[in-house]
Image (cartoon, rainbow, N blue to C red; front, side, top):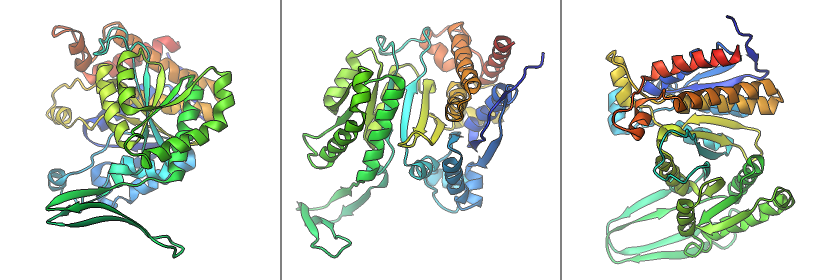
Length: 405
């Protein structure tokens, strides 16, 4: 039976990636999206080969398109190290496409678990999602580092552009060899991060907690706290009306709180903290394959959904040998569904939002009925049956078609 496809008013920007993640991406698009949705796709090939051929200009072009069209979605890509540079014969070590696009959108990454009631959680009482908001700017990811070979003085120097008196602070008097690291952030970016988090909390009805180490980094983390407090004044009445709270917490206390709580809140983290805590939560909820990832601009108008896992190189090599693989396609499916939902929200087309929600519900119910990939089956028991990635996508397609008839 032919199903009338849901019409999407505005194009999506689609960024294809590498290895098994790309294979899953194409299966999901061709089996679960295009048969049911009439959508124009502005496509960019972010495979490592094409990034090398274009000297990474394709990534910059994809970032600009993401800003122009407002909603984009990205498959996992290779960020090469020396070994992968040699493997692919690359001209240079290209930066992470994620970082390039995040900088273009000045976005905050929101990562959220997909909860299936029959998949055991390492932290069993996490019955509601915890959303991690990661400030995707600066810090360790744009730091400058130096190795010193002997005794000397390390200084921090700021020279004002207007020719004013430089600020100079001695970092350390080195008695011998050592290392040093310089981090930075911008008020504007911190303010955007705060606004994105508080907007998200209000949209979802979640309290917001910002974790910091202000007892040690009194000026650096203290500036984050000050800006969050300033921005919250814009939201205070709305939060009070919604009976929600915003609260800064020491990261030590926040980690302890997260283990004791049942979930249902947004945890705003600085860049590196968010990187670490995302993986911590993913394992606590069962699997990295059960995490969604959404990059949102401060005003909520630009959104990019991502697959929150790597390119699954081991599974890709199995796939190339013609062997079945049991890669988990749920994060890929949810990258498409969350992009469609956001597109429907911005376009004010409820039927697109309803389709996205139906797709997610269909896949969760499929897992809860016992159809799952190996990573999830092993969480239940060593003997639990499982299916390959392709089989899961095909079964999801049949279940979706039956539900939409």
